[in-house]
Image 1 (cartoon, helix red, strand yellow):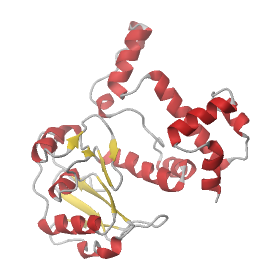
Image 2 (cartoon, rainbow, N blue to C red; image 1 turned 180 degrees about the horizontal axis):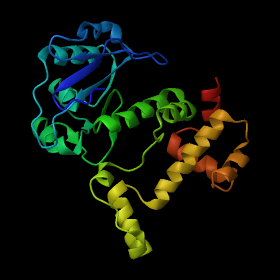
Image 3 (spheres, helix red, strand yellow; image 1 turned 90 degrees about the horizontal axis):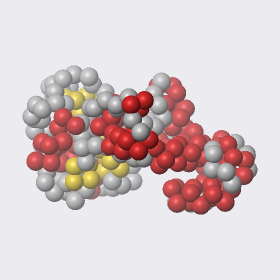
Image 4 (tube, rainbow, N blue to C red; image 1 turned 120 degrees about the vertical axis):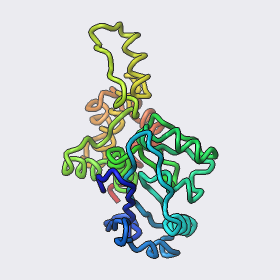
Length: 263
């Protein structure tokens, strides 16, 4: 990903099926990447790119027409699209009727340019099925780890996160990086709970619950521990409690989840 302050776009020159590696090309000046790679062959695959943006509050330039058409064609062909370049997706008409996000410094402009989209200024990334957006470069890492977690499980996402020396998952949204959290020592538990939810988008109990479910997922993927043992290790107490909350959060029972990632 480029760290330049000027408008630059990185676009994958090979669409990515599950398990394969993305090669990225930079589109800037005469160094145009091979946008022709994004054709009908993208069916059932994924393209990922990043777009360097201007400083917060500075107007985003219009993306190149050939890039817009290439991305639109790839999506029409069935590609899953994930990027930091929400303005490119908006110009391609891919955000209409969808939730999306971008860097907090550009959310108002994105909403102004694309009123048919629902722009969420608080989250780190949005997964809207086959169109995914993130809130800038660092949040793009969160989004990519989310994709790995979806396609290949928590254990593989955690391995990559350790390799990159980043957290496997950051809870909360962009607000936590804009306003500081007041010192807990000066707040009551009720006041702390309100501030926690305002800055992270969730309550302390919900946050803890999410961490317990993620820990259970990793144990189911990487160990042969029984559901009772995992329930105790994750603080869920009993297998019955774990099964109930796990199914509600993940959509399948623990045993089914384990079989899926062991197959």
